[in-house]
Image 1 (cartoon, rainbow, N blue to C red):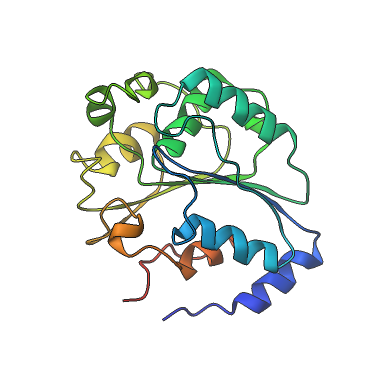
Image 2: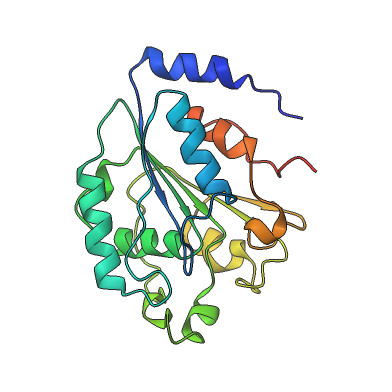
Length: 209
């Protein structure tokens, strides 16, 4: 059970002005209504926050350069008292690629949540998304970043800590039995991620069973 009162958090957030949230989906994701990102976009909107949840081009066969250009465009449009990025799966790797390249606009983001990024070994073995493989690990992230992943994610068999958390110095929360944190693992409504969006100190816990 959550110890946070979402209505109180929302009131506190609005007191300092609406925030902007950019939600980035992953490979083959066409923003299904049952996905936690779709739920999150709806809840944040209901709470008076500014939400950008774009359908990125060619989600089944994406191009890194196209996605980076789209990311830059959406980052440029973010406004508000705080700018937050929440990225899942390939969207999380997209963000890391943007950080590695020093993408304009990335430095203006106040905090980032990376959810279940697939590992380089998995990306390299999938022709449709091999071009997203992150090989550069010697870069500095532009702002406070958190990582949350399952301990049994088939898209990151090395473990998210080993693949990204430790090399990049990202604080990680590893959730038991959460898989790839998608719909097949039961991640529709996920109160903890909403709480984190409204309060960056909130713990990133598993969904209620």
